[in-house]
Image (cartoon, rainbow, N blue to C red; front, top):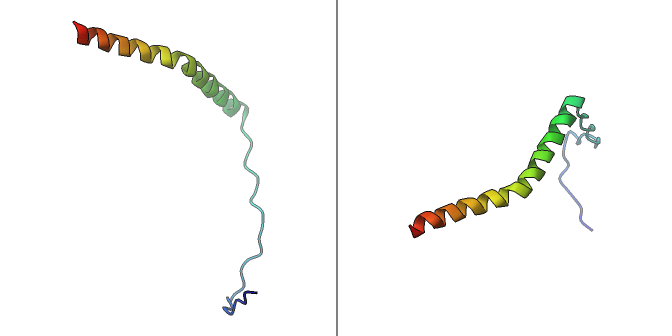
Length: 63
């Protein structure tokens, strides 16, 4: 077994659990909902916008 011969003085504070995180307000819940909805929309629309930009760049390169 390991014997810790260092005698820390003063002794360490007893462990206490962290306080719970504060709850979101109604406005905060609404903002989080809008952010999640916007991210889901961009998940679907983003690849289409990206592919059209790539198509436009390829069309410019060909002409």
